[in-house]
Length: 547
Image 1 (cartoon, helix red, strand yellow):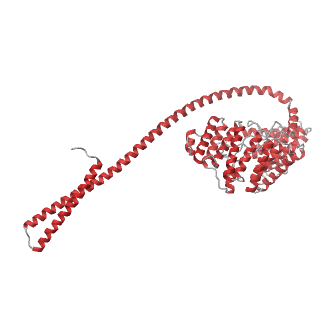
Image 2: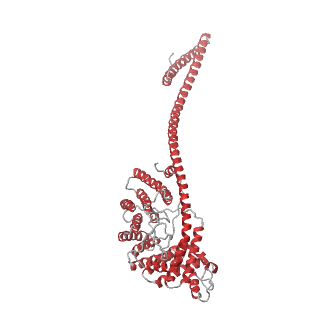
Image 3: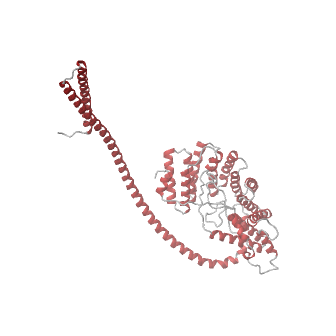
């Protein structure tokens, strides 16, 4: 007997069921006939009763056969379902095997990169120790030279401070990290005005990861990360999409950090065209990209090309946010810095004064932006030789810092500049003036806004030296040095700063800013925080991007 397939068994079973049902109907008809004849004759025949019993027994057997056939049908249906599930499980096993092989390859590659990175770290630490040793030896040679040339360098630095051709953006390793022009891509304003476009959360996270890698100099990771994400966005959303423009902004930031200004400018121009096309020419995101492009031109010294871009960004923000919005004041600060490097001091004063009025009105006199703007305006006054006006602004900044730390001014509660001038007046009476660290504790007030207040102390100290007030200058410089030392000794706390396009309270901030030469006035500002990141492949999966 040949084996039958499941389909053949099912077909034969259905045929048997049909036959059994027909046979059951025939038996029922015969049985009903016999019962009817017995009732009609009203006679009980043993033969008829025997026939009826046989027929009933046959019906029971037929019913049993039908039940068993239906059970077989149910079992066959169940087996089909089991077989389908088995096929699904086999497909899933094959997929898991493929993924496992891919993960093994990724793990092997990552382990190789980790070994290479560990070797590189060990080499860098050795180089660092060697450089620190050479630097410690070099300091002994420089100490005597610094003491002999202190007064000459101070005078020279004050002359440089009056030069309008000061570089707008110094090296990132400058001792004084200050707030020059801060480019802020668009989404910061998109939420504020509900303009219908919001940066996806995965792009915010990606920006922070790129910032982390770029800050470590790991451009071999940051650049491919950006390019892969950009390629993925273009495949899924098309080139002319706001998310693509945001990704172009992020990649431009990385290129800017590598001093690849031409490539960064091309990316920003592409992002600008996309945002103008998709969001409209007067969208806040367009203003943010214009601002970033202006900053980039400023880094390259193209101030005339940067100024109209900055003015257009200002017009858009005034139109969308209102003329007295704090972000308008930020744009005014950027525009003032560009004009300052072109020697347009009347416009510089007008822009700074308007920004200062907005900050004081909207954010209050104790906001850090007020102190920064006053410091920047004072620097502009110094470049014009308006030393009295600059001195007044520096003292106002220090007065507010004193009030924030110690309370109201009066009696023995004196701001640092007043103490410095009193020490200058009494230097002939008391030649054994103790260092100011023992005289009082005002240097702690610099913690209120360390970059701004420390810069102000240095700038006012340089101004005092120009006026011949050396004791007052040394008091302020010592205070600034103590404040900076305490700030560098504090452990850094990571912060999550997204500056690529418009999340609340954020904007894409380039680290380059107004130059701060020794003794020369410097603009005030703060550095961005960074967020730690994981492995490249995990990042893409977490961000929903293709690896």
